[in-house]
Image 1 (cartoon, helix red, strand yellow):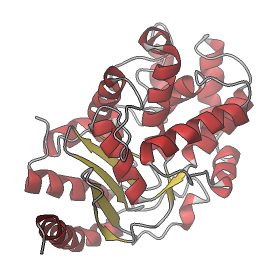
Image 2 (cartoon, helix red, strand yellow):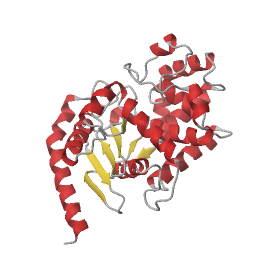
Image 3 (tube, one colour):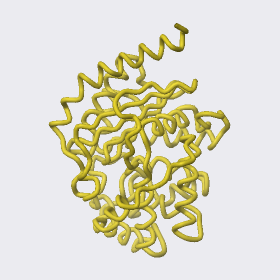
Length: 315
C-alpha cells in the first residue's frame, strides 16, 4: 500500500469514528423550517469531506448529497465584490466589526451612525455586498456569481435550486425590511425586489461536501484554483475573507467557535459549514440539524474534533 493510500485509510477511519461519535447530536436540533423548502431536509443527514490539494478527498457519509449554500454564499460574494470594486468601495457600504446579535437582526442598523451593516456576514451586510456585484441584470449578476463558485470548486456543473430560491423569496419579508432600510439610508440603490431575487438565488446555489471542501482549499491557499493551482483572486482578498470567517463566520457563536476550534469557517442554515485551514486543508460539512444560533450541531462538534485531532487551530 502506497503512502497516499495509507493516509487515505487513516483519514477515513478517523472521520468514520468522529461521525459516529457526533451523529446523535442531530436529535437536539432542528432544521431551518422558517424557509419552507429547507424544512424538507432530513435532520439525521451527516456528511463531511476534507480536501488536501493532492487530488485526494477524504470523506464520510453521503458526500454527494446536494444542499444549498445559504449564508456560506456571503463569503464568496464578498470576495467577488472585492474583485469588482476593491476594499474602499466595499467597506464604505459595510463594516468590519463582529456583532453579538442574530444574523437577521435589524436593531444595530437603527443605532449605527452611519446606518451601514456591521459586517458582511450578517444578512444586512450580505445584501449590501450582493448589491455591489457587477452586471446589467439579475441574470448577468447571477451568472457571474455562479461562474465564480464553479471556478473555486472546480465543478463547472454547479447551479442553483429554483425551488429553494422561490421558497426563500416568498418568505423573505425580514430581508426585504433590511433592504428597504438600507436603501433609505443610501447604502444600496435600485430595485429591492431585484436585489432579493439575486440574493435568494445566490443563497440557493447547490453544492456537495466535496465542492465545499475544494472551495475551502481555494481560500486556504490564498485563492488558487483547487486543481490547476492557478490564482483566482488576489492574496489580500482571500486574507480578508478568511479574517471575516474567523471573526463573524459562525453568527453570534463566532467567539466561542474561535476559542474551541480556531479554524476560519462559515456556516449556513441549510446545515453546511465550510472550513479553510490556511495552507493545509479545505473542509466541507453537511448536517441540517441546527442549534438556536443557526449553526449545524454536528458540524460544530466535528470541526472541534478535527481541530483537536490534527491541531488545525490557527491560534
